[in-house]
Amino acid sequence: SSTYSKLLIVALGILPIICPPSNGLIKTSPEFLKSSIGLPLISLFLLLAFFLKDKPSFRLFFKEKASVALTLFLGWCLITILWATNPYEGFRVLLPWLGGGVTFFLLARNLNPSKDLRFFLKVMFVSGFVAATIGVFQYLLGFDFFSQAAGPASTFGNKNMGAEYVVL
Image 1: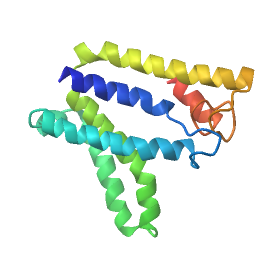
Image 2: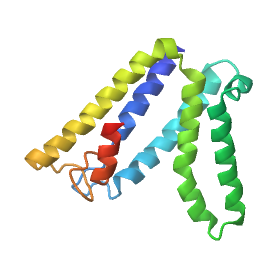
Image 3: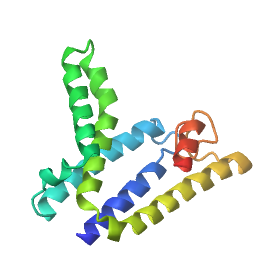
Image 4: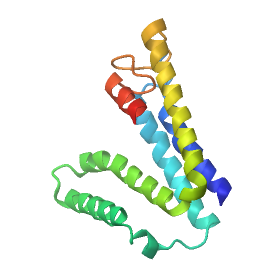
């Protein structure tokens, strides 16, 4: 249980740092690569949660108001795709939201705030520090290993997304 929680936290901390190199080896945007790796990774952790842990308690999950609000929001998003002009585009936009919802579910279900909060904050700090350091190297030293639209963007597509991640 504790090992599973720590692996989940580390995976969430590493995911923002993943970025394609600028040498053209992987021809994609940083955001698309994060989604392409992140969504299957989150799905894998969701499956592991059901196999390694006891049966999930949905009653406890839905006692939280944030869980109910998120579930209603994602449910409404899925329903509106039924009458969308282009359902494919709707699913493409909805996938990151579904990934975030599943991540919220995994964190709310599997993390013990009294035991895992300190480790979670440490991993997020290190992840933010690494992203900020890469951004500083890009600004001061012209470090251009990662592809970016507008630098210094660290491991993100543009500098606004990089700055938002570091600030959070």
